[in-house]
Structure formats: structure tokens, C-alpha cells
Amino acid sequence: MIEFLHQFLASPVMRESLEPALLIALVTASVSVMIMAHRLSFLTVGVSHASLAGMGLALTLSLPLLPTATAFAVLIALLLAFIPQRQGISEDAGTGILFAGSMALGIILISSAPSSRVDLFGLLFGNILTIAPEDMRWLWLIAGVILAVLGIAARSWWSIAFDSVTAAASGLPVAGLRLLLYGIVGLTVILCVKLAGIVLTAGLMILPAACAWFWGRSLFDLWLIAVLFSLAGTIAGLLWSYAYDWPSGASVVMALCGLFILSWIIHGRLAWLKQHVLKQ
Amino acid sequence: MNAPVVQLSNICLGPVGKPILEHINLSLDAGHFLGIVGPNGAGKSTLLNIIAGLTAPHSGHIDLFGQCLRRFNRRALLKQVGFLHQLHEHQPRLPMRVRDVVAMGMPSFANPLRWRTLSVQPIMDALALVDLQHLADTDFRQLSGGQRQRARIARALVGRPQLLLLDEPSAALDSARQDKLFRLLRRLCDDNGMSVIMVEHDIAAISSHVDSVACLNRRIHHHAMHGEQIPESIWQAMYGEHIRIVAHDTSCIGCVPDISHAGHTHD
Image (cartoon, rainbow over all chains, first blue to last red; front, side, top):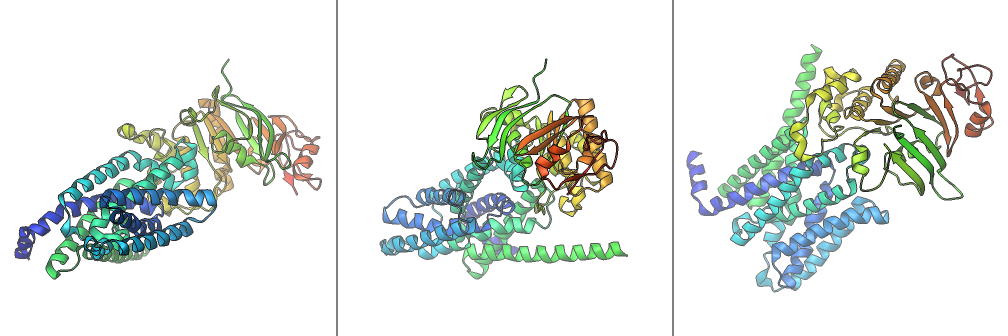
């Protein structure tokens, strides 16, 4: 085992992938708490799939991939915040429409792009092992923005998730803060796509908080536990990926799924034991 | 002389033919405890929402603490207001301790620059007011409906507001707890000079505690001060001709013309 870890750390490819993977794990775990609190899981799935259109657009117009995809994902997330309010369409229907439409546009654009420029498998399922230095700078920038905004707005978002009417009555600009949250979800999706791809991104953005939900009793607890689960899942996933030559994103999401099931079972057993002991 | 805590001038909301509220004029001084009664759909909750800055009236003027309520000063003014909205189905989903729920009522809760200054003592004091201090570290989701409502009341009180807006706070509380709550509010008005506007259905339950009762059904039909009687014609104008007034106790703000301070409405 120790030899395996030594080999893993000695591998330059894996060593280079650790920094972006752990950065992504930290940011997604932090945002995942708000995604769970505001029930934005489907929005996350929608925005991540819709970002394919942004990538298609970047490839067709020869624009830089990550900045274009970032702008597009944030735009889609903000549209998803606006459309249901303005037109009386339910949020899940709005997400479904934009999700399917953008995905279709993305597939058409990418299929028309010169095939040598497209790593479709990488876009769909992610590949943290091929991250370029310029991508890394972009990731740090996005991560910095997300964490800074989270630091400032986390309690306001938490308050809105608990009771939006009382939050508004306390003077919080609820509509503006909601838009900001949707924008941050869009940004986080782009951050994740490099590791988990369009299809698996939602897993990284939902599972850490889902695991923590069993154990946390306050916003800080939830954040800390979600980050620990996310880091553990990412490291375990990368180790699996290295050991069995599995795709890195899928391995990380599988590890997080495993942690979720484990959490669920242990929490259920503890609750049963507590009840059982209390009865006696 | 101090400006009124709340001054509503000619508040109107809704289309002309079918108004939700029309020509509401109301003034509330510091330390005053006002009860609002009226039938379902009378606009009671809407009026509270207007005072809390959640709903903008179509016409009229709202002054809070002597200042006109506007977009730019809304946040500063509302920091002095505690608000408890009507309890609909509210199954809490977020994992939170009771003390964290109450902490959300602190004016500095959402301000990242003042997190470190958030003190535990006001939270425990607010919980003590509603007898929940022993449950401070309990998961809010595990409380009963009545305990959750008391925690929400503590949240509204924790910032020591100058004005408290309560929409049916006694919902989910048993009659002993209701009475305890009304006594607490009375004490806060008398001792701290807090003003309270409380929407309630049961005038008999609140009448011995409040300073005045406003009878609302789209407009304020009558504003009865403590000791004043409310003519039966007012009840009929609000609830319809079929209403019959029955006296139950002698402490109610007048419900029956010939029985002083006594009454209760029945369909």
C-alpha cells in the first residue's frame, strides 16, 4: 500500500493533477452546501449540460474555451433564475427547456467544428490529467472569486434558504442574492467540468453536501464536513483512477457515491441504536 | 414629542373595483400594543407585509420611526423591526441548532465584517423569553410545531426590535402558551417601549393584553382603544349580517354594546 502511494506521488501526471483536483474539491464542497440548502440540484445538472453550447460556441468561433464556457454557463444560470419568475414557468420546466436546447446547440456546433480540435470524451466526462498551465490560472481565478463571494454571502444565502420571507423582512436584498447564487453555481460548474466533465459535474456539486447533511448541525459544521468528504472522495478517486486506469472524474464521483452510501448506512444504524438504547 | 413608530397615510392596494386594502390610516406610538382582527381575506397579512416593506402599496405613505420607508433606507429601518409571518406548512429542511435559528434574527448576522461580534448572550436571553433555553443545542427539525413557533418568536425578538410585527403568532401554541406569549409582549411594550402590531383571529384571547384593536376588512372599520366598545354594526359590516356576539368574559375590548369590555365573535 505504502509502495503504491509512493508510486502515485512519484507519477508526475498524478502529482500535477492533485492541485487542481483538490482545489475543485474544496470549492465544489463549499458551494454544494448552498446547492442543497436552496434545492438547486437540478439547476446544477441543467447548467452543466447547457455549458456544452458555450464550448461549442468557443470551438466554432475559435474563442478561448474556458472563458467562453464560463460566460455562457453564468448566462444560462441567470436566465434560469429569471425565466420562471417572469413568465410563470416552473423552475424545473425552465431548466429542462434550457438544458435540452443548449445541449442540442452544443452538439450541433461541436459536430460542425474541425474534429482535430474536439476532445468530446474529455468534455463529457472530464480529464483532470490533461490540464494546461493557462487552464490552471483560470481555475485559480474562478476558485478565488467563488470562495470570496461565498465568504461574504454565505450567511445571507443560508438565511434565505431557511426562510426567505423573514430574510426579506430583515432588509436582505433576496432577489439580488438569489441571482448572485445562481451566477456562482454557473461559475462552479465550469470549474468542475475539467475534472468531472459535463455529465458528471452535478455529482461533485451535490454529493459532498449530501454526505454532510447526515452529520452537520450548523452551517459551519456542514461546510467543514462537506469539504472533508469532498477531499477524501477526490483523493480516493484519483488513487482508484491511477490503480485501475479508470477515468479520473468518474472515479472521484464513484468514490463520493460510496461515501454517501456509507454515511447513509452508518447514520441510519446510529439512529436505530440511539432509539433502541433510549427505549431500554 | 417623538415621531410615531409607524404612521400609515392613505394606504391603498389592489385594483379600484376590487381593492385589497383601501384608505388605511394608522398611527402607532412607542410602547403601543395593537391587535388587528378581521375575517379571512381581509388584508391583515398584506397590511403587515406593507409595513415590513415586503409589499409596495399602490398609493399612500409609510413612515417608520419618523422616516419615510424607501428603497435606500429600507435595510436600515428594517433592522429595528422584528417580523414573524404567518406559519404555513413549514417543515424545516436545514440542519440547524435552535440557537442558530435565533441567531439569524440578529441585525449583524448577515454582515461578514461583524460575525466575530455576534454574542451568544442575546440569543440565550431571547430563548429564555420563550422558555426554550434548554433546547438551544437541539436540532430545530426535531422540535414540535409549538416549540418551532416559539423559536421563531425568539428569532423575531433577539434583535431587541423597536417594532414587532406578528402574524398569528399563537398558531400552533396551546392556550396556556398563548396567554404567556401575550403577557410577554405586554411586558416588552411596558418595560422596553417596544411597539407591537399583532394579527390574531380571536379577539377574546388578546383583548385584555392589547392597547387597541383595529377591525380590518379591506379598510379599518373601527379602531377601538382599551375600554372602548365595538358596536355590533361594525362586526356585521366586517363579517356579515349573520354574526352574533356572545360575551364570555369581562376583560375584552368591547364587543357587545350593553356589556362593557366583554365579548367574542361567533358565526
